[in-house]
Structure formats: C-alpha cells, structure tokens
Image (cartoon, rainbow, N blue to C red):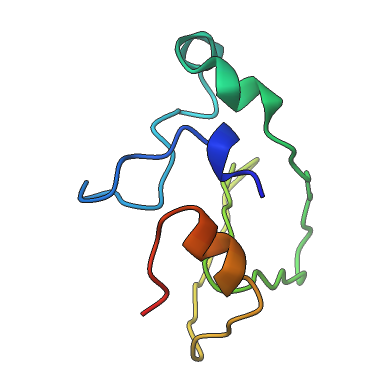
Length: 92
C-alpha cells in the first residue's frame, strides 16, 4: 500500500486520487519527502505494446517520442478495492 507515500490530494479535492507531485520535477519531491519513499515500477513500451493497469492503479505516463494512447474502461474490477479503501477512497 503506497497511498501514504503518494502525496495524494485530500478527499474532496477535484483531483481526488491524484498525486500533488509533478513526478518530473525533483524540487516537488523535496516539498513532499514521503513521495521519495514510494515504490514504483518503470515500464518502457514499444510500438505495438499494450499495458493493462487494474482499476484505480496509480500511474504516470512519460512520452519519449510522438505516440498515441487510448484509455479504455471495460468495467470496474475489485482486486485493489481493499487498498483503495485503506487510502480513504470509495470504490463506488
């Protein structure tokens, strides 16, 4: 559970479930020291690759060149519901 390290906006904020930190700006990491402790996975996708992220999975996208992305929601899964509730969010 990385919620405590993600420097999330508070409940009620319009950007609920998003981090306050611009992940590309190390100066913001200094303003939110807990963010430096977050565990991450880095994935580099190539032409034709796809990545599945479960419902409510935290992610950040960096484009290394011109690309197109498509987000599709095909329903809500609940494999992470316990962790999302622990973060203080309602899965609905």
